[in-house]
Length: 161
Picture (tube, rainbow, N blue to C red):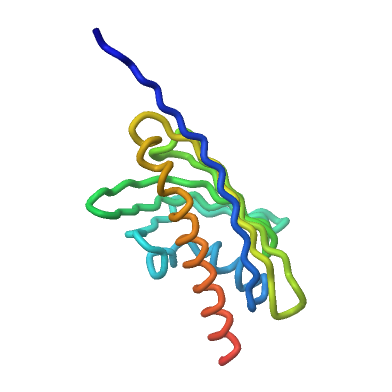
C-alpha cells in the first residue's frame, strides 16, 4: 500500500526599509540585474535574455539568475517590469516554483531619503515546499539587507563624486 502526501506551500513575504538614499538610486540598484552577483548572497550569475523599453519609460527585462548554496544550485528566469523610479514588478517565467510574483516600490522621502517596499508571493509543492518554507523569511531578510546596503553604499559613492 502506498501513501501519497501532497505538500503545498504558499508563502507571502513583505519587507520595508527606510534608507538615506534617493529613490532614484534605490530604483537603479534593483533594476541593475547584471550587478546582482556582486552583492547578493548565493547569486552566481545573471544573464539578461531580453530588454525592451517603451516610450512611456516602462522597461521589461527578462533574465536568468543562477543561485547556489550549500552544494545545491538552481536557476530561474524572471520578467521584471519597471516603471522608472517608482516600481519594479517581478514574475516567474521559468524556475523551481509553481508561481512567483513580487514587487519593489520606491517612495521618495524628500531629496535624500526613500522608503523601499518589497513583497513577494510564491507557491512551491512537494519536497521543495518542505525545504523552502522554514528558510523563506530569513532568505527575505538577507535579500532586503543586501539590497539596502548596496543602495546606501551606492548613494554614498554618488555624493563623493
